[in-house]
Length: 83
Image (cartoon, rainbow, N blue to C red; front, side, top):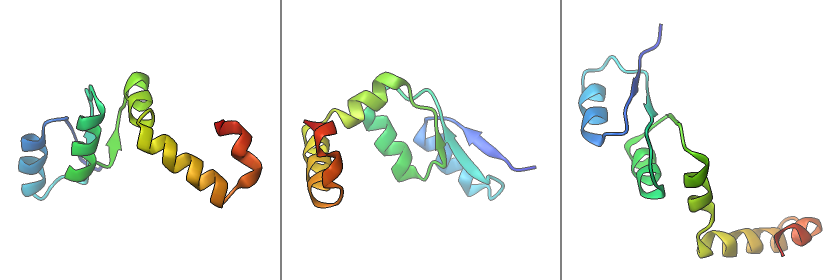
């Protein structure tokens, strides 16, 4: 059996990982894009992310700029999808 801790609290993640028995981290109850970033930085293996938070994450102007740049440079045939 593998042991995954299920929390979105950084202090709990750090404490449980220090015990040496945790195989991974499941970040749950995430409410915003900042928490997703924090959980990724803390080493979460799995995150349950509500749809509105995913939309918030990809809705940033720099994300749209990066997607447009990627599409133009790598896959020009898909450029119409992002206009």
